[in-house]
Each structure stands twice: as C-alpha cells, then as structure tokens.
Image (cartoon, rainbow, N blue to C red; front, top):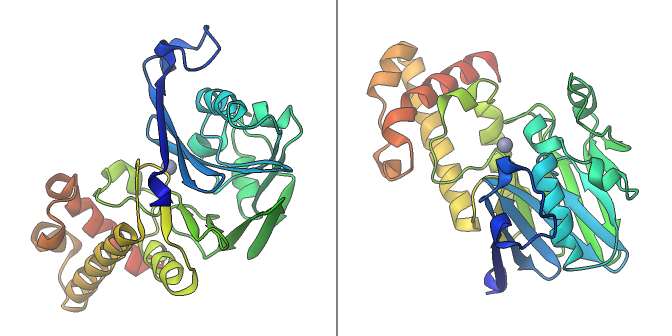
Length: 288
Ligand SMILES: [Zn+2]
C-alpha cells in the first residue's frame, strides 16, 4: 500500500532538526513526514498537516501552519530535495493555517489562494500572513514539473473561501477543516462552521473527484472510507435535524433528544453532539 510506504517520526529534542535553538514552545513536539504517494508527503506536527509535493522543478507546500511548524517543515524538506519551494497554497484563510509563510517567501515562493480569501487574509492585524500572488475564482490548475494540484471552490464550509485540494493524477485529496473523521468537534470550533455548506462540499467531493488517498488537516490519517463515514455523519445529522424542525420542534428540544448511535464511538460524541445539532439547525435556517 503506497500510502504506508514511509513514516519518519522525529522530535526536536532528539535533534532531528539542525537548529539547536528551537523555540521552547515547540520542544518535545513530534512531527512526521509521511510519503503518501510518489513524491507527495504529509507533514504533520502538533495536530496540523501540510501537504508537500516534490518535483524536479521545485516544491509545492500547501499550508505553512504557523512560523514554528514552517521552520521545521523547511528543514525536513531539505532532507528530501535541494530544490526550492516554488509555490505555497493557502487552502483557506484561517490564520492558524496561513501564517508562517515568510520562510518560503524569502526563497522566492509564489503564494496561491482563492480570491475570496484575500480580504480575510489581509485582516491579520499582526501582519503575519504573506499576501497571495496568484488568486483564482472557481478552479485553478497548479502545475509544476510532472505534478498537478487542482484547487476547487465549492462554496463556504468551515471557511468562506476554502479550496478543495485535489491531485487528479495522483488520486489524492487534501481535506482541510471540513473533514475531521471520527471526531465530534469541540463546540467553540463551530462558531463559523457552515454545516449545510460542509455537507454540500462532502457530497460534491464524493461525486465529482477521483481519489484513493485522503489527507486530513488535523488527523494523523484518513482514507476514502473515513471520508465516507464523515459524509454519513453529516447526512444523518442533517436528516435528523431537518425532520425535527419540520415537525415544529425547538432547537433546544432537538439538541436534547436527537441521538446518532451509529457514531457513538466518535471522540466527543456524548459531550459535543448537542452543539452540532444546534449549529446544523441554525445552518438550515440561515443558509450558512
Ligand atoms: Zn484547522
């Protein structure tokens, strides 16, 4: 199985990066650089994933994920190739994913994102986000060497300007924030979560894109089967909440009574499901 070919785990205190003066806040944090497809890696460090695509013309990084992770990522890329990072893709505008790109800008990388992200990225009052050089509206083909990444805009979901990141030739999907399989997410993460939009994204991805490998932005591993399970959760939640609203029941009542026992094994199910029921109800009412 190609997606299990290589997994390297290092920790900073074990000296797997050369910078002996790594900031204390990242000490002891492990990271992995896992080969998912030929020359395509998932870099994961403290719950965040970047996608790394290596070609004979240079490297593409999707999501720097903050200055500390980007610094470790850059030194790990240097162990794989001496080629420069030519492109950085922002999957979306959230600053925890989009900050930290300066290290790649200094070597000449161009930054790519959906046009709707540019204003949101510019809102960073700490000015830690490198502005985008290339923007697109609905679909963008990013080609470098023998590799191709397609960026699709499928509407709002967990952000208003999310790119669906798909590698058609490698049959790989990078799902950022709109796919957290096996986890009924913490309620504070739902403030801006467009639940109906997320369901629509999952449906379109399933219907329109071909892939046999899935990388999640916050989970160590995913798969097409886990994406299917995530879609099933979103469908079941939508169906139960929609039915309850049509029967005239209140959001409070729905939050207390709806159960989805087929997902009771998901992390956070007992504690967090009521908040997801409420967010889905408002998303049905408000359209986002
Ligand atoms: Zn995220």
